Length: 451
Image (tube, rainbow, N blue to C red; front, side):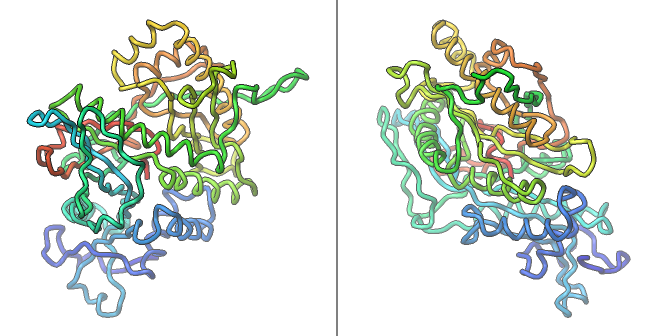
């Protein structure tokens, strides 16, 4: 399936006849068919094509949010027959993003909202590999995304209201800004780095699945202070989380590190739904049912202390790349998309850790909450046949909670060198120094950003 241009007649990767362009609707199934053996073994070929089409209908992908790209040869004779050679292909997903930087001249933080493009499904037909086509495509794509889908303010995703702190300013330009693009490399760090995407931290902690034991009559997977997260409970959590990131975390970091630009993909509802609805499609075809527990939320045990702002919660998703036809579940994982500690400012540094460890009651509460939430995740992982539960890039504070929680089955810290390497190309924004990706700090570099 796909293009059939004789390899002997292919142009070099530097040829001016090569162009990066949008895939026609009838070309998309061709690229999907090519990627099925690599990314879709858990589904049949027809199910995989149906899933890829389904993903184009999700809120994050609708109205041009998902773009299908191909590298092709404009001089190819097959182009005249509407059979363009697909030399390399990829997809980009538009996401809500933000950047914050301290302005010393005005003593305020400038917060710029805009978009980011997440790049995924980078693939070259095996018969065209080794000729540099993927490299050429990425060179062209990096430049193209700088202005791709820059549109009027009315087309921006809706964001929470911004409350000024210490004179900080939200940039309200009429035109939307493309702040950066991201990708998650499965071929190591060097290929994309040489094309402008800097590799960022790529560690995770892995926990083993644990089956739930109901031997005790009083045993329950959800004690009174712990409750499941479902579709109807998720929206207000996303709203509060995104608002805090915009109004507290990013401005605070910008002031603490005035020579850095702090950027983030916003963990809004559409972003999380993209993962959860993808999961629904997979589990419905594999298990003939869908999960009801999408995460867990922990409140302080005493009602008088359980107000909003003191909750700890996590949202997760299950991913399947190997299916269940064999006894092996290797390659199937549960990922914690986002972990939130309301009322605790975790800036990802040692100072955040110090503040918590100096307050024994708070530390004890956080450890209890983490242990309880993780136990639910481990039980869900066992029920849904995945290899492990993974949590990306835990901060020093979260690492401390993991260490003290005495998680059943233990845990393993993993440094990924080859797969799912978060990588970012910074395009710059008004009031922020140019295009130096080296000046950028990626905040909330968690699994929810993956695409």
